[in-house]
Image (cartoon, rainbow over all chains, first blue to last red):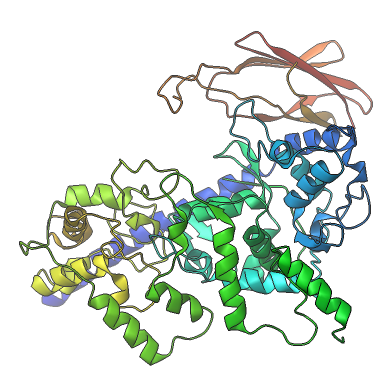
Amino acid sequence: MRDMQRAVVALAIAAAAISIAFAQSSTVDEIAKYREALQDGNPAELWEARGEEMWKVPRGPNRVSFERCDLGLGPGVVKGAYAQLPRYFADAKVVMDLESRLVYCMVSQQGMSEADATKIKFGDGSARRSDIEALAAYVTSQSRGVEMNVGLDEPHVRDMYRLGEQMFFYRGGTHDFSCATCHGEDGKRIRLQDLPNLTKTEGAQKAYTTWPAYRVSQGELRTFQWRLNDCFRQQRFPDLVFGSEASIALTTYLAGRANGAAYDGPAIKR
Amino acid sequence: MRITKVAGAVTAVLLAAGLGGALHGCATAPTDAETAARAATVLKASFSARGQAGLDRLDQDETQKLCSEYASRSLPAPVAEQIRRANLASIRFPADGNLVGDWKNGEKIAQSGQGFQFSDDPKNPAGANCYACHQLTPQELSYGTIGPSLYRFAKSRGFNDETRKYAWSKVYNADAFTACSNMPRFGHNRILTEQQIRDIVALLVDPASPVNQ
Amino acid sequence: MADPMKIRANVNGDSTEVKVLMNHEMETGQRKDAQGKTIPAWFIQNVKVMHNDNVVLNAQWGPAVAKNPFVSFKFKGGAKGDKVKITWVDNRNDTRTDEATIA
């Protein structure tokens, strides 16, 4: 009789555990299905179209178009350009990512002031749209399917990579967070959002090749500069300056870790 | 690659221009310690104060410095011991000795991810965001896995003073137990008030709390 | 005039599949801004798709449809080279029409 009671209790506990586990895995699975369904009709295409138009139009006080802008493969060459960024640019004498290179072209070629070029970095869902986000969507779409090939042998790029690597593990702020707090282990998630392990090649590849992305919750196309800024916001750090040396170093580190993977953006995320 | 006079002059110019990424690749690569020091400097120069988040957020205390240094390699036992001891010493218990508050309020604090971001209003109370990393009540399916499940926290440890004291201490300063813990030091870093920590403790140890059902 | 739609139309056997991505805020009218003021409703109310002289889709939408709506549907008939014309009208009486060729 006691064995029977024990068996019933054991069964009840097991059933409770299984039902919690089942509810858990079915929640995660359903969300995965939803994300899969979102792939079709990615609103990022609307930004790509806007960016493509913008690329050819003469702009700024000098009335020059981006067709003169060298992203590393020659003036106006867009195909495959994102997959080899960040890189060292001899004319600017620094390593640049896509966003900072676009700003460089706007300032040095089109004659805009840095303030004007970066007035609207991130769209806020209103009529205040970001040209940089649209241009980034277009340029990155032209690297879809291209293998990531950041030139880590180049000394300046290698230096940025190593700098970014150190920054990745920098604990700070009121909550002692570093990038590694959330992105340093396999198989973890925040709430129901899976976290890529960026210290491993597979994680870095999956993560880096899917930015920029249309963030459904933002209703906007977001770039990697935005992603870094928003991570630091949640880490309780202050405002990461757009195109700052730290942002380039971290981008170089993560883009370099993604080398070898086919670029898959612009993507769509929750 | 030989270091020529020209390369040396160019290096000087780049450094003078404030661009940290000089031509190190030629002769000796910088040590990890040098790169780490430069990383800290560059980080601070790459942020601007915003909302309630000032640049002092980038200043590291001893624990943060050590944990950053050893982050990508294994933490030597003496260093871990040093970190645990220093953080244990920082734990403050309430003057009236009461460690347990209201679990219903604790659940609200556990659910809230607000507080201390530059986008947060400093007038609003901060949350602890426990569910970002932990399972707690069985009803809440949207929980993270960065930390272990806290389901049946007191039920599995015992409804006693030792459990209550451990819960308080862990929330106050997690590094007292796990050097370089991923968990924020809610009491030590003044993220939560004393009453808020009491309420979280209640969520974990109150026999009536859903966590212990 | 509002931003252009992205339209893809492909023949699949005896039917045509059309996929449209529209540029629109689709504001529900329920949200409040940072100052607490209600953001006015602004959403597409009607979508009409023409193939030659036939209406192949007529839709009445409400605020439940998400921002930058994507709609995918099939209609019987259609041949490569035919034109498909899509028009939306919103609650402010703004409208947008775009055409695409069936591939």
